[in-house]
Length: 269
Ligand SMILES: N[C@@H](CCC[C@H](N)C(=O)O)C(=O)O
Image 1 (cartoon, rainbow, N blue to C red):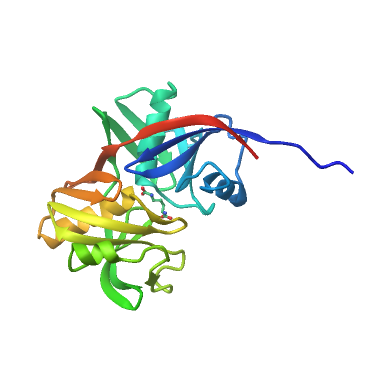
Image 2: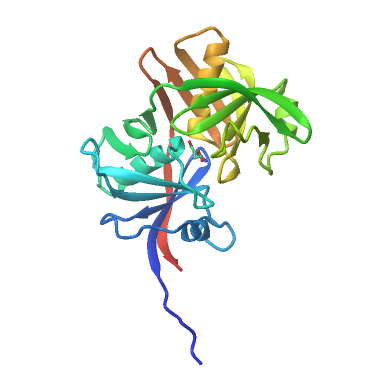
């Protein structure tokens, strides 16, 4: 009795932005629509390549951009937007000659994002943060009030008392939140400090705690500036994996940070 030994091979690259890491799958003919389980297998840190998410590079149907970023969380779920992901996506396009800088438009589920190369870093026009209601999040019986913010995807930004509290926070498990307000789940950011310099940790929907979340940093920067009574300005957001710079203008919000490709290979499924 023989085994079915058919092996599927998938070309990939691996990259990160401030430690938020992604498997990149070039699917230039849009011939490889990955199932949730395949994404989860590739993102698995012990049995796969490992990643907080997956970026599939496919042709864009929107005439405003050549490429569409098909972003998936590590568990295979779909999210509207990924801020670190879009910088890594553009770094990959530039490295492979699939796009020319310094300005690259990328189609995402949250619309077209324009990414500009600025030295070693990439600046993304993320569009303005949209503030919603206030809500709350709880961890191990402690509850903090939070500001709901949409960056295309949902965020709940909670301010903590001090650094020690932030350091001690148990973020292995999903913080509790109002499931009626967030039926699709939410990314929860915990913050200390005030604009122009704050620190955050994050628990991401569909992933867990990550070293960074670009859209989360945008939400946090916008809330910090607003708490400081500023409609516009710049806020440095330190995350466990590095630093992102958030600039709010009258028209939009820019996120600036690094993006690095660290490996290429073939995944055998
Ligand atoms: N890490 C990302 C956000 C990825 C999506 C998020 N987990 C969600 O489900 O909304 C970022 O850098 O923005």
